[in-house]
Amino acid sequence: MKNGATTAVKREPVLIANRGEIAIRIARTCRALGFPTIAIYSEADRFSDHVKACDQAYWIGEAAPKESYLNVERVIAAAKKGGARFVHPGYGFLSERAHFVEACEKAGLVFVGPTAESMRLMGDKIRARETVDRLGVPRVPGSLGAVANAKEALGFAEKVGFPVLLKAAAGGGGKGMRRVDSAKELESAFEGATRESLGAFGDGALYVEKLILKPHHVEIQVFGDGKGKAIHLGERECSIQRRHQKVWEETPSPLMERFPKTRDAMFEAALKITSHVKYAGAGTLEFIADEEGDFYFLEMNTRLQVEHPVTEWVTGVDLVAWQLLLACGELKWPEIPARNGSAIEVRLYAEDPQNFLPAPGPVGLIEFPSGAFVRSDAAFSRQGEVSVHYDPMIAKVSAWAPDRQAALARLRTALDEVRVERPRKAGGESVGSLKTNLPFLRKLCRHSDVLSGNTATDLIARSPELTEFQNTPPSKEAVLAVALFQMLLDTESQSMNADPSDPWNLAALREGVRT
Ligand code: ADP
Picture 1: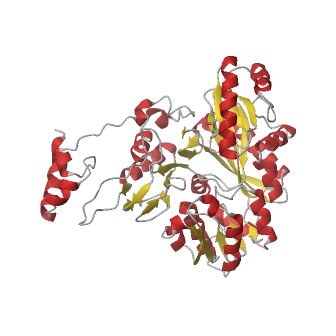
Picture 2: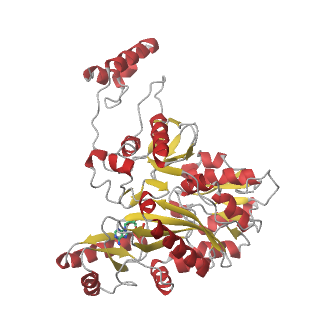
Picture 3: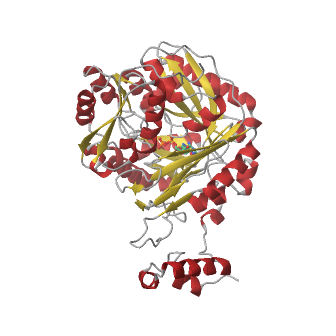
């Protein structure tokens, strides 16, 4: 039984302390394994699909995360009310909060993840850096811990050489990070990064790192038994990022295909760390690798990653099943799984493809591709709302094939089939597509550097063509088809009121015929 998907056995209930696509994805595996499921939802998620995906659901508060998904007492109260035995945190929200793990234990619930202690040790960037130093795992040159002031930062910057990065000790999601190119910029950058970090994390501590040029983000998926045994499930390359946030993830890493010895060294380092901290369950060691084949530890994420599907594609392992079976003491300890083929995932966001700014709003129709070796992990299956209160990710679309070029071809075809539209107006008239990064993703999977695997983290910044979009006028045929459709519906009065930027607006179509 490789991925734990046996016929359902009656098991104790799991509270899924999350929302959106990850809550739905966890619920599916729970069902396959016979775990009853309990959803929690905020006011904004009253009608969300993750609520329907579970056997029971509890309202836990207002839309703001701190009133609901980040509110430990309310999450625990829902778990107790629903008769949960396990709590699966997903990613984000409370997934990396050690005090939540302790609160679960105190309430007699089993947290599906590592202990509070290993979370504190590896989840804290500075403590994690101290640990990897002791284990002899390379980290980016710079200060070990937080620096006291700009002067101390300057000392480290001069030692490792400019450019450097100032990074928030409490950082995450790319926030509180500043590139500094020279000594004269340092003081104001230090002040700015301190302020940003204080605002975002309530902690202004910063550390200094050498800026690695042409960096690639390569991470290793690990799984530990909580007693010192650890295996890895290969690497993922997540170098294609906007605002230091991933938008494309793949395995194997195109860079590591060129440096197999570096990859082996990274596996070894990842296993050393995982065993040392007696890590339990799924975790990820993030590294930066450069084009010389050197690598450096960045941080550990003590939870399931957004991009775990690509690892599942190549290993055939259901990581959530392993997490659950480990938590209930039923996991037969696995061997390091063989990895087969190539998998790529993209993140579909409700955001402006020109500047990546969030563009939340209602979704009237969503359609995902089905087909051989294509997977869509979506927050909703037909319609829903991308809320202003949460991350605007709509779905993850991934594809597998025996080799990278074939996986790219499958992904291209799949993305061409995705449709995301706004709700229709009364009378059935569509008001057009929702603003998403879909046009950007479609370009990305055709970009020459992506095709050749030349995907350092600066790819988007150095490729302005990826974010340039013209409102291409529709063809004559499209205009005729829409005109016919409109005549059939006799919606003359409605088209008068239509949004002129809507590609299905007849008046706008007539003005911009492409010949
Ligand atoms: P966060 O926890 O905020 O996500 P990370 O330390 O994981 O911060 O870094 C996020 C991204 O920022 C990395 O994937 C990489 O693209 C970039 N980055 C981080 N540190 C460095 C560095 N020293 N040199 C170059 N790029 C870096």
